[in-house]
View (cartoon, rainbow, N blue to C red):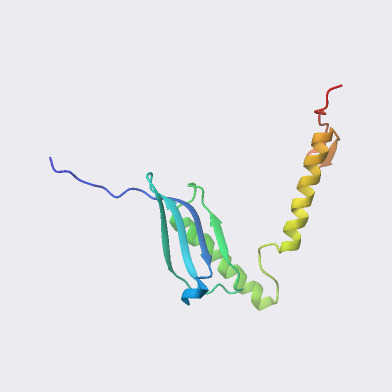
Length: 133
């Protein structure tokens, strides 16, 4: 019986369109980070510049195939094209919004550790205090 080797299936972890290395004069690159069971595999190829000039990242975590990630990148690029035509900003939140989301999250965590009730869309949740009485 001949010894046949089948190519290993790549499990995608991250699919993104990012700027290339400026020192080497690269343009935008389409990068896919995947795992084949033994090692990490990096696929790096040239791509067209996104319409808003912002990186597009699709975390796959093994649940999304390369074809699905390609579709998502294309959809985001088309959405950004329409947003640019209308004069709107990118679909991704800006740094100020991300910072505010992080501060809100940390405030909720501090309240949980202090045993303070939190109110939100899920209703009233009483947190148990971690301090000994």
